[in-house]
Length: 121
Image (cartoon, rainbow, N blue to C red; front, side, top):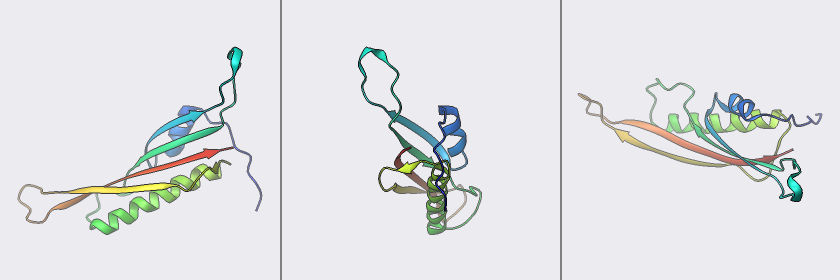
């Protein structure tokens, strides 16, 4: 296995990388440097509101939660493939709610999940 050198990504490139997995919010951290000298970014904190890979599926609650966990795994692997290293373990918060459709007796589960992790070069 060879090491991959981390590529410097613009904000648009980060969003394009993570878009297949959900909506991303990216925060950067860099050291405070006097005299307004541009400092390198040390860490990227990434929060992704995950989306189902097949949103129109009629699977049950646990199949949808499993799909979101798979999306989280793929998002982390996509970032690692660009050469970034995780600063800490990723955190996935699963949520959701049951909604009734007009005319249906059984509720439909709307799955929600948020993935948070930080990376550095």
